[in-house]
Length: 170
Image 1 (cartoon, helix red, strand yellow):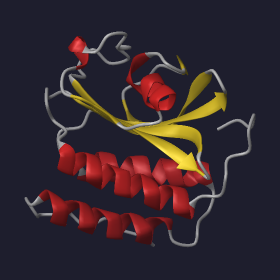
Image 2 (image 1 turned 90 degrees about the vertical axis):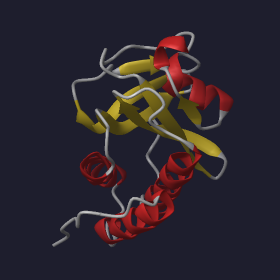
Image 3 (image 1 turned 45 degrees about the vertical axis):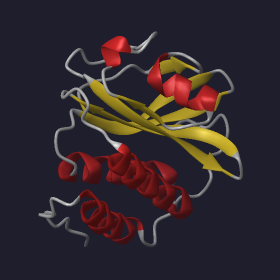
């Protein structure tokens, strides 16, 4: 059975390298995308400091993301593509790193305590199927090293998980 080990490194590159090793071990031998998303959300929420939300939204139609597994307070269930930080990540097909969500036009306040956000689009064979979303109560919580580390974790999730069947429920 997998057991997370506390990561004591203060160097972010080392931290994310150790966290990626833990994620690979956690997902080894499992290909179910929902189970992997649930475990990955829990691992990130447990290990990455200063988060108040970590989870997934999956693209259920070309116009809409639907809430997937997460850790944190209850969240918005549906987000239109192009709306909020998550919908913008899908529309732009690029990671969104927002230092202050209150200055992000169209931000969706699912949790009023959130101040910064990092959203990584999940792509397989060039097609977006969802996003990995991290929120923090601290403004400016995420920097380029966090972005690189979380993008690496997203790549591990994609490689380990079978494709999500379009139209299937998460």
